[in-house]
Length: 559
Image (cartoon, rainbow, N blue to C red):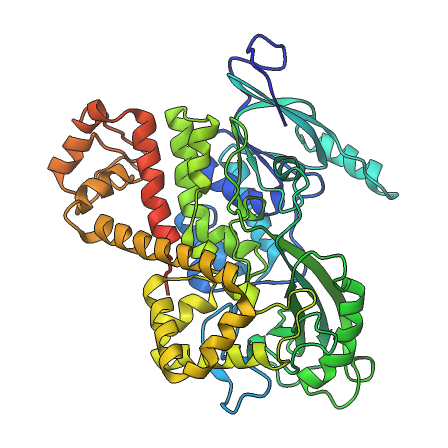
């Protein structure tokens, strides 16, 4: 991405081809469809074919319903995408004297990605959206009046490539070439070239390595494991292995099994290939097989990947007219794999924020940075990742992580679902975390010094700051939601009007008149007193700050 100071260049047009261009279509099509449904002119640029993989995405049903609320899918389409649902969900740790924790409705819905993306793209196109497949993004130039994207045909390989290109041309696929947009939305994942440029070769602070497989032959296949261990820290102290497993929708005895570990990006760390060797050795014991994978199961596919995370996340806008969403923004928890769940959690606020920016013509770097501002709930999770990994050269007791996890999960189970379920979905909340920490300290006082020693003073001091910020955000959102300024915050925050431009029930008319609307959809009154006190940019940033209080405190969680 480059910036140009003059709008007279031929690469910039006074009227852009699109309001927004979403780069990266696999998950980007969901954000694109949400924006297109709100009347924006949106194009999706995808280097390959825009289609989902065969392997299911696992998610919780309330998260999935976000797509219906945003008019990305219909209720009927959503139900068709769901391949299976399963319960209970198990969490257990090696060496624990207590039985495994059993819960329900956490990542228990298997969604068929191919069908979900097909429906989303179909609805997107019906609303006037444009999809450019096999389109290579070679660069972006940012001008004062728009962004110029250098798009060209991506190379295709194989005997069917030429025939497919001809068929697309006959079907009316858009011609591939340079396009212009008011806003560029980077949804190209953690490998995005725009993100790599923005981070200037920065080494990740943490990495989650994942290997696994989908296999057929599991007769007992009605439940799932969210996190489980069968061993202590490796003998070479390179890390702790965790397991996760779900029924697969391809058949009644098909099951997907993952093994993952947390570590830093030190060159001494093991490779994915070595992890896969350990997977084949350890998986039979974990899954209770009598023999080996080769003798007891039919292997359908092998899965592997790595997920880098950065402490200075989420990534704020680095240029005018360019913003990151999804894994490209670093918005995912350092404990999770990112992907669909991380995007869906934030998609409502991102859709609101991007539409607000487009309607208000607030596409400068400072305004777009407000879409991805500091969230203490995300930063506070870093200490948990630190405690679940082993630093280079460290020699903690090999059962330390299992004891820590066993105590922590036992405490959360005793405190009930209000504490446990948000954490199991990577949502950190001040009250729940506070209760857990206090209860751990009271019931297991001898273990607290060991945690402090293993985590180290630096990370503990850093975490205390984020925990204090989490408390402040929780209080701030509580005041904005139900305090004396609640009505004012609701109007400024975009709650005055619904998508059809009708005033919502429960919003005080005097407050609406005072603030001059503030909704980002439908009818927008700008005649209130606040419209003369605050500029459009100030009102925009205030709305984003209210969202930051909500999401940054984990108060967006819906059970």
